[in-house]
Image 1 (cartoon, rainbow, N blue to C red):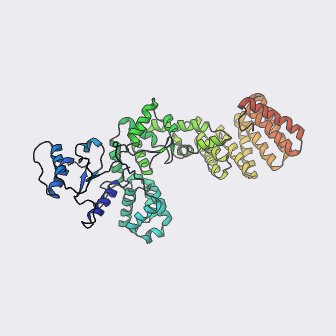
Image 2: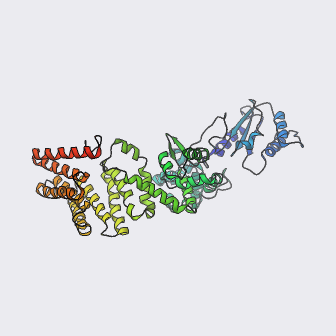
Length: 522
């Protein structure tokens, strides 16, 4: 990808050999560097090198390809290194390549994953944390980094361990001795790729572009269809993205066409990384770049609404009781669902508003990760009140969910306050015969049962059972839930015969409604 250090690595390799004693160096017949992206013609650069450094008598007339071929024939007979830097299309250099003789060694730097066949590829990755820190230390010193070591590590992570970004920022911090690393991190968080320091390179750097300008080259080479896919991809979190999500989100009807655009365009240009097993990832700085592109696009609203609707649909399908396969599937989806809840909730319609929060909290709560679930339950309640009003039915639902979570945590006093609020609000705003009343009664009975308040639990659970049968019919899941909770209560009281009757009814009902393999049956 852009900024990963391709040119710098090739340059350091070449300089290392150039500066050796003639007896020790590998390339005694010269090292020729060709700037392919430069406006100067590739063939002309080779001819000029031949005249200026090798003192060859080159042909002054004829086709350029023939004149370059003549140079290769006159070239020294010992090993030479020819470096073609920043090749974007193999056709650019094909006619100017030296003969396939062992004396010519060639290095090509490129962003393209599949430049040509029969080329040995060294795919450069970003730095590891230690190397990234060492790079920063080389500019601003060990003591300065040591004072803010954790912030320095986080800065490396913020920059995605990309060498170009790290060097640009390190050089900026070297010039700003009074800046703390944390201050730069705050600026980077607020301004993204518009932050000072990361935008422009300095004259003494190998790279002559800032991060944004480096990415712009790859962007300009994309066709319109690929750019549109990139807009959608920019909304995902910087985390592994399952192909299934991309397929559902991007408006490409033919799946083969979508795969071609991903592989031949975005992946081949190193804007998207293929992690294998149909999972992809975007580098954190490319992600910021693509998000900026989206914000200036005419498709901004359409893309955001489409993304939100997809995530709402997924959240609605997350069951209240997860099984192993659900969890394995959702682990990669939850980070992208969180994006909607944190950043894009304004693009969700009122009817679907609570679902991202419900889905995320269910994912954590059903695994007993109560601390992770609680902030989402609270946020759901707070935002729902602000957006829909204090008396909306979704406020009732949010109170019920929060109360149930508190019960599972053993925070019984807080749970009772919240669950009574939900019941009173539900009866007042929705009436006595609403399914949410059943839900509130069941949750309240569950709480009392856990506390050992069996008489109170029996009263509300019997109410819940009767009301659920009355308004939902004999075969509704809420009836099953009421039967279960009442059965648990009788079991806790030692009323085993009564408990057995109710629990058998619940099992039979769940088998009928949900099938033999559902967790509720178990």
